[in-house]
Image (cartoon, rainbow, N blue to C red; front, side, top):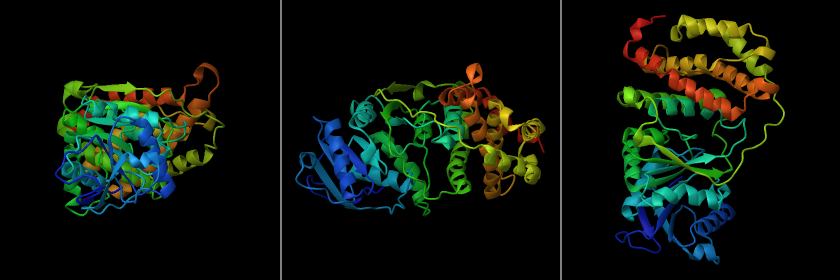
Length: 412
Protein backbone atom coordinates (compact mmCIF):
# COMPACT_ATOMS: atom_id res chain seq x y z
CA UNK A 1 0.00 0.00 0.00
CA UNK A 2 1.02 3.62 -0.01
CA UNK A 3 0.14 6.56 2.12
CA UNK A 4 1.70 9.85 2.42
CA UNK A 5 4.25 12.44 3.23
CA UNK A 6 4.11 15.03 0.44
CA UNK A 7 0.36 15.53 0.56
CA UNK A 8 -2.16 17.72 -1.17
CA UNK A 9 -5.37 17.40 0.81
CA UNK A 10 -8.71 17.91 -0.88
CA UNK A 11 -10.65 18.75 2.26
CA UNK A 12 -8.37 19.79 5.11
CA UNK A 13 -5.25 21.90 5.41
CA UNK A 14 -2.23 19.94 6.67
CA UNK A 15 -2.30 21.76 9.99
CA UNK A 16 -5.95 21.15 10.80
CA UNK A 17 -6.85 18.29 13.17
CA UNK A 18 -8.15 15.16 11.50
CA UNK A 19 -11.89 14.72 11.69
CA UNK A 20 -12.67 11.21 12.82
CA UNK A 21 -11.10 8.07 11.44
CA UNK A 22 -8.20 7.95 8.98
CA UNK A 23 -8.21 4.99 6.58
CA UNK A 24 -5.04 4.15 4.62
CA UNK A 25 -5.69 2.04 1.52
CA UNK A 26 -3.61 0.15 -1.01
CA UNK A 27 -4.14 0.78 -4.73
CA UNK A 28 -7.51 -0.70 -5.71
CA UNK A 29 -9.43 -1.04 -8.98
CA UNK A 30 -12.30 1.49 -9.25
CA UNK A 31 -15.05 -1.02 -8.46
CA UNK A 32 -13.11 -2.41 -5.49
CA UNK A 33 -12.46 1.10 -4.18
CA UNK A 34 -16.15 1.96 -4.52
CA UNK A 35 -17.13 -1.17 -2.60
CA UNK A 36 -14.56 -0.42 0.12
CA UNK A 37 -15.92 3.12 0.57
CA UNK A 38 -19.47 1.77 0.81
CA UNK A 39 -18.43 -0.73 3.47
CA UNK A 40 -16.64 2.00 5.43
CA UNK A 41 -19.68 4.27 5.25
CA UNK A 42 -21.88 1.44 6.54
CA UNK A 43 -19.42 0.48 9.26
CA UNK A 44 -19.09 4.03 10.61
CA UNK A 45 -22.42 5.79 9.91
CA UNK A 46 -21.78 8.60 12.42
CA UNK A 47 -18.01 8.78 12.07
CA UNK A 48 -16.27 11.26 9.73
CA UNK A 49 -13.81 9.38 7.54
CA UNK A 50 -10.60 10.53 5.87
CA UNK A 51 -9.23 8.18 3.21
CA UNK A 52 -5.61 8.21 2.08
CA UNK A 53 -5.51 6.45 -1.27
CA UNK A 54 -3.34 6.61 -4.38
CA UNK A 55 -6.47 6.29 -6.54
CA UNK A 56 -8.98 9.00 -7.50
CA UNK A 57 -12.20 8.60 -5.54
CA UNK A 58 -15.35 7.77 -7.50
CA UNK A 59 -17.96 10.52 -7.54
CA UNK A 60 -21.70 10.66 -7.28
CA UNK A 61 -22.30 8.14 -4.48
CA UNK A 62 -23.50 8.74 -0.94
CA UNK A 63 -20.46 6.87 0.41
CA UNK A 64 -18.05 9.11 -1.50
CA UNK A 65 -19.84 12.25 -0.32
CA UNK A 66 -19.05 11.32 3.31
CA UNK A 67 -15.33 10.79 2.66
CA UNK A 68 -12.58 13.40 2.83
CA UNK A 69 -9.97 12.31 0.33
CA UNK A 70 -6.24 12.69 0.88
CA UNK A 71 -4.17 12.57 -2.28
CA UNK A 72 -0.43 12.28 -2.03
CA UNK A 73 3.00 11.48 -3.32
CA UNK A 74 4.42 8.74 -1.07
CA UNK A 75 7.48 9.79 0.90
CA UNK A 76 8.85 6.25 0.94
CA UNK A 77 8.38 4.09 -2.16
CA UNK A 78 6.49 0.91 -1.36
CA UNK A 79 6.95 -2.30 -3.35
CA UNK A 80 3.29 -3.24 -2.93
CA UNK A 81 2.29 -6.86 -2.54
CA UNK A 82 0.37 -9.32 -0.46
CA UNK A 83 1.57 -8.15 2.99
CA UNK A 84 2.16 -4.81 4.66
CA UNK A 85 5.81 -3.76 4.62
CA UNK A 86 8.10 -1.32 6.38
CA UNK A 87 7.34 1.36 3.78
CA UNK A 88 3.59 0.99 4.42
CA UNK A 89 3.99 1.53 8.15
CA UNK A 90 6.31 4.49 7.77
CA UNK A 91 4.04 6.21 5.25
CA UNK A 92 0.99 5.54 7.41
CA UNK A 93 2.59 7.18 10.42
CA UNK A 94 3.62 10.20 8.37
CA UNK A 95 0.12 10.78 7.02
CA UNK A 96 -1.31 10.43 10.54
CA UNK A 97 1.27 12.90 11.80
CA UNK A 98 0.61 15.46 9.08
CA UNK A 99 -3.16 15.32 9.55
CA UNK A 100 -3.32 15.04 13.31
CA UNK A 101 -5.07 11.67 13.22
CA UNK A 102 -5.35 9.74 16.47
CA UNK A 103 -6.85 6.53 15.01
CA UNK A 104 -6.13 4.79 11.73
CA UNK A 105 -7.29 1.73 9.82
CA UNK A 106 -4.60 0.28 7.56
CA UNK A 107 -6.23 -2.03 5.00
CA UNK A 108 -4.31 -4.33 2.68
CA UNK A 109 -5.05 -5.59 -0.80
CA UNK A 110 -8.59 -6.80 -1.52
CA UNK A 111 -9.92 -4.60 1.30
CA UNK A 112 -13.30 -4.56 -0.47
CA UNK A 113 -13.92 -8.10 0.80
CA UNK A 114 -13.96 -6.95 4.45
CA UNK A 115 -17.54 -6.64 5.67
CA UNK A 116 -18.81 -3.54 7.54
CA UNK A 117 -19.32 -5.47 10.78
CA UNK A 118 -15.71 -6.64 10.71
CA UNK A 119 -14.38 -3.15 9.97
CA UNK A 120 -16.38 -1.69 12.86
CA UNK A 121 -15.18 -4.40 15.27
CA UNK A 122 -11.56 -3.96 14.19
CA UNK A 123 -11.56 -0.18 14.79
CA UNK A 124 -13.79 -0.04 17.89
CA UNK A 125 -11.15 -0.30 20.59
CA UNK A 126 -8.76 2.16 18.98
CA UNK A 127 -11.52 4.69 18.25
CA UNK A 128 -12.62 4.50 21.88
CA UNK A 129 -9.04 5.03 23.08
CA UNK A 130 -9.03 1.71 24.97
CA UNK A 131 -6.35 -0.11 22.96
CA UNK A 132 -3.34 0.70 20.82
CA UNK A 133 -3.66 -1.92 18.12
CA UNK A 134 -6.62 -3.84 16.75
CA UNK A 135 -5.71 -7.13 15.05
CA UNK A 136 -8.22 -9.06 12.92
CA UNK A 137 -9.09 -12.70 13.37
CA UNK A 138 -10.02 -13.95 9.93
CA UNK A 139 -12.38 -16.86 9.27
CA UNK A 140 -10.32 -19.15 7.08
CA UNK A 141 -10.64 -22.69 5.86
CA UNK A 142 -8.76 -25.41 7.74
CA UNK A 143 -6.14 -25.61 4.98
CA UNK A 144 -5.51 -21.89 4.69
CA UNK A 145 -2.75 -19.96 6.43
CA UNK A 146 -0.80 -23.06 7.47
CA UNK A 147 2.56 -21.25 7.78
CA UNK A 148 0.79 -19.02 10.26
CA UNK A 149 -0.69 -22.01 12.12
CA UNK A 150 2.54 -24.00 12.19
CA UNK A 151 5.08 -21.29 13.00
CA UNK A 152 3.95 -17.66 13.25
CA UNK A 153 1.04 -17.96 15.69
CA UNK A 154 2.48 -20.52 18.15
CA UNK A 155 5.90 -18.83 18.24
CA UNK A 156 4.46 -15.36 18.78
CA UNK A 157 2.05 -16.59 21.42
CA UNK A 158 4.70 -18.54 23.34
CA UNK A 159 7.47 -15.94 23.25
CA UNK A 160 5.51 -12.70 23.49
CA UNK A 161 2.53 -13.88 25.54
CA UNK A 162 0.01 -12.61 22.97
CA UNK A 163 -2.91 -14.51 21.48
CA UNK A 164 -3.96 -12.84 18.21
CA UNK A 165 -4.38 -15.72 15.77
CA UNK A 166 -2.85 -13.83 12.83
CA UNK A 167 0.23 -11.89 13.99
CA UNK A 168 1.08 -10.94 10.38
CA UNK A 169 -2.39 -9.62 9.54
CA UNK A 170 -2.83 -7.47 6.44
CA UNK A 171 -5.35 -5.15 8.12
CA UNK A 172 -4.79 -3.27 11.38
CA UNK A 173 -6.28 -0.54 13.53
CA UNK A 174 -3.62 1.70 15.07
CA UNK A 175 -3.54 4.36 17.74
CA UNK A 176 -1.23 7.30 17.18
CA UNK A 177 1.42 5.96 19.55
CA UNK A 178 1.26 2.48 17.99
CA UNK A 179 1.69 4.00 14.53
CA UNK A 180 4.65 5.99 15.84
CA UNK A 181 6.21 2.83 17.28
CA UNK A 182 5.80 1.00 13.98
CA UNK A 183 7.04 4.01 12.02
CA UNK A 184 10.24 4.14 14.07
CA UNK A 185 10.79 0.40 13.60
CA UNK A 186 10.10 0.73 9.88
CA UNK A 187 12.57 3.58 9.45
CA UNK A 188 15.41 1.34 10.56
CA UNK A 189 14.70 -0.76 7.46
CA UNK A 190 13.79 1.95 4.97
CA UNK A 191 16.92 3.95 5.84
CA UNK A 192 18.96 1.08 4.39
CA UNK A 193 16.69 0.62 1.37
CA UNK A 194 14.77 -2.36 2.76
CA UNK A 195 11.33 -0.93 2.00
CA UNK A 196 9.84 -4.38 1.56
CA UNK A 197 10.95 -5.70 4.96
CA UNK A 198 8.29 -7.22 7.19
CA UNK A 199 7.37 -5.87 10.63
CA UNK A 200 5.68 -7.79 13.43
CA UNK A 201 3.14 -5.37 14.97
CA UNK A 202 1.95 -7.74 17.72
CA UNK A 203 5.51 -8.27 18.96
CA UNK A 204 6.21 -4.53 18.74
CA UNK A 205 3.12 -3.80 20.85
CA UNK A 206 3.92 -6.47 23.42
CA UNK A 207 7.53 -5.38 23.85
CA UNK A 208 6.44 -1.74 24.28
CA UNK A 209 3.76 -2.60 26.86
CA UNK A 210 0.93 -1.44 24.57
CA UNK A 211 -2.55 -2.90 24.56
CA UNK A 212 -3.73 -5.37 21.90
CA UNK A 213 -7.30 -6.11 20.88
CA UNK A 214 -8.35 -8.98 18.60
CA UNK A 215 -11.57 -8.69 16.61
CA UNK A 216 -13.45 -11.25 14.55
CA UNK A 217 -13.82 -9.81 11.05
CA UNK A 218 -15.26 -12.77 9.18
CA UNK A 219 -14.14 -14.08 5.83
CA UNK A 220 -11.81 -12.03 3.68
CA UNK A 221 -10.21 -12.38 0.27
CA UNK A 222 -6.55 -13.15 0.97
CA UNK A 223 -4.10 -11.82 -1.63
CA UNK A 224 -1.83 -14.40 -3.25
CA UNK A 225 1.86 -14.15 -2.31
CA UNK A 226 4.16 -12.48 -4.80
CA UNK A 227 5.91 -15.84 -5.22
CA UNK A 228 4.14 -19.18 -5.24
CA UNK A 229 7.36 -21.02 -4.38
CA UNK A 230 7.08 -22.42 -0.85
CA UNK A 231 10.82 -22.17 -0.20
CA UNK A 232 10.76 -18.46 -1.04
CA UNK A 233 7.65 -17.72 1.05
CA UNK A 234 8.88 -19.67 4.06
CA UNK A 235 12.34 -18.11 3.92
CA UNK A 236 10.89 -14.60 3.67
CA UNK A 237 8.18 -14.86 6.32
CA UNK A 238 9.71 -17.27 8.85
CA UNK A 239 13.16 -15.74 8.38
CA UNK A 240 11.75 -12.30 9.19
CA UNK A 241 10.07 -13.68 12.32
CA UNK A 242 13.29 -15.40 13.42
CA UNK A 243 15.19 -12.12 13.01
CA UNK A 244 12.57 -10.30 15.09
CA UNK A 245 12.80 -12.96 17.81
CA UNK A 246 16.56 -12.39 17.88
CA UNK A 247 16.15 -8.61 18.08
CA UNK A 248 13.72 -8.88 21.02
CA UNK A 249 15.49 -11.64 22.94
CA UNK A 250 15.94 -9.46 26.01
CA UNK A 251 12.18 -9.08 26.24
CA UNK A 252 10.84 -12.60 25.71
CA UNK A 253 13.44 -14.32 27.91
CA UNK A 254 12.00 -12.75 31.05
CA UNK A 255 10.36 -15.48 33.10
CA UNK A 256 7.32 -13.36 33.96
CA UNK A 257 6.51 -13.11 30.24
CA UNK A 258 6.19 -16.84 29.71
CA UNK A 259 2.40 -16.66 29.57
CA UNK A 260 -0.02 -13.87 28.63
CA UNK A 261 1.51 -10.72 30.16
CA UNK A 262 -0.83 -7.99 31.29
CA UNK A 263 0.49 -5.63 28.63
CA UNK A 264 -0.56 -8.02 25.89
CA UNK A 265 -3.94 -9.11 27.22
CA UNK A 266 -6.28 -9.66 24.30
CA UNK A 267 -10.00 -9.02 24.28
CA UNK A 268 -11.88 -10.66 21.41
CA UNK A 269 -14.92 -9.05 19.81
CA UNK A 270 -17.00 -11.44 17.70
CA UNK A 271 -18.92 -10.77 14.55
CA UNK A 272 -20.75 -14.08 14.46
CA UNK A 273 -18.93 -15.80 11.60
CA UNK A 274 -17.90 -19.39 10.94
CA UNK A 275 -14.97 -20.95 9.13
CA UNK A 276 -15.11 -23.09 6.05
CA UNK A 277 -15.94 -26.79 5.99
CA UNK A 278 -13.11 -29.29 6.06
CA UNK A 279 -13.94 -31.09 2.79
CA UNK A 280 -12.06 -34.01 1.27
CA UNK A 281 -8.55 -34.78 2.51
CA UNK A 282 -5.92 -33.85 -0.11
CA UNK A 283 -3.24 -36.27 -1.26
CA UNK A 284 -0.59 -36.25 1.47
CA UNK A 285 1.83 -38.61 -0.26
CA UNK A 286 3.86 -35.91 -2.10
CA UNK A 287 4.50 -34.12 1.21
CA UNK A 288 5.53 -37.36 2.91
CA UNK A 289 7.77 -38.27 -0.02
CA UNK A 290 9.43 -34.85 0.18
CA UNK A 291 10.10 -35.37 3.88
CA UNK A 292 11.51 -38.86 3.44
CA UNK A 293 13.74 -37.77 0.58
CA UNK A 294 14.98 -34.87 2.67
CA UNK A 295 15.70 -37.20 5.59
CA UNK A 296 18.18 -39.00 3.34
CA UNK A 297 19.63 -35.94 1.62
CA UNK A 298 19.54 -33.31 4.37
CA UNK A 299 20.36 -35.43 7.39
CA UNK A 300 23.86 -33.99 7.60
CA UNK A 301 22.51 -30.42 7.61
CA UNK A 302 19.78 -31.25 10.11
CA UNK A 303 22.42 -32.78 12.39
CA UNK A 304 24.12 -29.37 12.56
CA UNK A 305 20.91 -27.78 13.82
CA UNK A 306 18.96 -30.42 15.76
CA UNK A 307 19.94 -32.37 18.89
CA UNK A 308 20.04 -36.19 18.89
CA UNK A 309 16.59 -36.61 20.42
CA UNK A 310 14.98 -34.59 17.63
CA UNK A 311 16.92 -36.49 14.98
CA UNK A 312 15.75 -39.75 16.52
CA UNK A 313 12.15 -38.51 16.37
CA UNK A 314 12.57 -37.65 12.70
CA UNK A 315 14.07 -41.07 12.00
CA UNK A 316 11.01 -42.73 13.51
CA UNK A 317 8.76 -40.50 11.42
CA UNK A 318 10.64 -41.38 8.24
CA UNK A 319 9.82 -45.05 8.88
CA UNK A 320 6.18 -44.50 9.88
CA UNK A 321 3.48 -45.72 7.43
CA UNK A 322 1.39 -42.87 5.94
CA UNK A 323 -1.77 -44.07 7.71
CA UNK A 324 -0.06 -43.63 11.09
CA UNK A 325 2.01 -40.52 10.38
CA UNK A 326 1.84 -37.99 13.22
CA UNK A 327 4.45 -35.42 14.19
CA UNK A 328 4.32 -34.84 17.97
CA UNK A 329 3.60 -31.23 18.88
CA UNK A 330 6.55 -31.05 21.28
CA UNK A 331 8.91 -32.31 18.58
CA UNK A 332 7.74 -29.67 16.10
CA UNK A 333 8.04 -26.93 18.74
CA UNK A 334 11.63 -27.91 19.47
CA UNK A 335 12.46 -28.11 15.77
CA UNK A 336 11.23 -24.55 15.22
CA UNK A 337 13.10 -23.33 18.30
CA UNK A 338 16.30 -25.03 17.16
CA UNK A 339 15.99 -23.40 13.74
CA UNK A 340 15.49 -20.01 15.42
CA UNK A 341 18.69 -20.60 17.40
CA UNK A 342 20.59 -21.74 14.31
CA UNK A 343 19.38 -18.60 12.51
CA UNK A 344 20.78 -16.50 15.32
CA UNK A 345 24.11 -18.35 15.49
CA UNK A 346 24.44 -18.61 11.69
CA UNK A 347 25.22 -22.28 12.18
CA UNK A 348 24.91 -22.63 8.41
CA UNK A 349 24.11 -20.20 5.62
CA UNK A 350 20.69 -18.73 6.40
CA UNK A 351 19.38 -19.43 2.92
CA UNK A 352 20.35 -23.10 3.23
CA UNK A 353 18.95 -23.18 6.75
CA UNK A 354 15.50 -22.00 5.67
CA UNK A 355 15.55 -24.40 2.74
CA UNK A 356 16.23 -27.25 5.17
CA UNK A 357 13.14 -26.24 7.16
CA UNK A 358 10.75 -26.62 4.21
CA UNK A 359 10.48 -30.45 4.12
CA UNK A 360 10.05 -30.50 7.90
CA UNK A 361 7.22 -27.99 7.54
CA UNK A 362 5.62 -30.20 4.88
CA UNK A 363 5.82 -33.13 7.30
CA UNK A 364 3.99 -31.05 9.90
CA UNK A 365 1.34 -30.09 7.33
CA UNK A 366 0.76 -33.72 6.38
CA UNK A 367 0.44 -34.67 10.04
CA UNK A 368 -1.91 -31.75 10.75
CA UNK A 369 -4.21 -32.52 7.83
CA UNK A 370 -4.29 -36.24 8.57
CA UNK A 371 -5.12 -35.61 12.23
CA UNK A 372 -8.23 -33.67 11.26
CA UNK A 373 -9.44 -36.52 9.05
CA UNK A 374 -9.23 -39.32 11.60
CA UNK A 375 -12.55 -40.98 12.52
CA UNK A 376 -14.07 -41.14 15.98
CA UNK A 377 -12.34 -40.12 19.22
CA UNK A 378 -8.90 -39.95 17.57
CA UNK A 379 -9.96 -37.00 15.43
CA UNK A 380 -9.00 -33.47 16.39
CA UNK A 381 -10.38 -30.43 14.60
CA UNK A 382 -7.74 -28.35 12.80
CA UNK A 383 -8.30 -25.36 15.08
CA UNK A 384 -8.17 -27.50 18.23
CA UNK A 385 -4.89 -28.95 17.02
CA UNK A 386 -3.43 -25.48 16.37
CA UNK A 387 -4.38 -24.45 19.91
CA UNK A 388 -2.79 -27.63 21.32
CA UNK A 389 0.32 -26.88 19.26
CA UNK A 390 0.52 -23.35 20.65
CA UNK A 391 0.29 -24.78 24.16
CA UNK A 392 3.20 -27.11 23.32
CA UNK A 393 5.26 -24.12 22.15
CA UNK A 394 4.51 -22.44 25.48
CA UNK A 395 5.51 -25.55 27.40
CA UNK A 396 8.78 -25.82 25.43
CA UNK A 397 9.73 -22.17 25.82
CA UNK A 398 12.20 -22.95 28.68
CA UNK A 399 14.02 -25.22 26.21
CA UNK A 400 14.61 -22.27 23.87
CA UNK A 401 15.59 -19.95 26.71
CA UNK A 402 18.12 -22.50 28.00
CA UNK A 403 19.63 -23.13 24.57
CA UNK A 404 19.69 -19.42 23.79
CA UNK A 405 21.64 -18.60 26.94
CA UNK A 406 23.96 -21.62 26.86
CA UNK A 407 24.16 -22.81 23.25
CA UNK A 408 27.43 -24.66 23.86
CA UNK A 409 25.68 -27.16 26.13
CA UNK A 410 24.64 -28.86 22.93
CA UNK A 411 27.22 -28.91 20.17
CA UNK A 412 26.21 -31.20 17.33
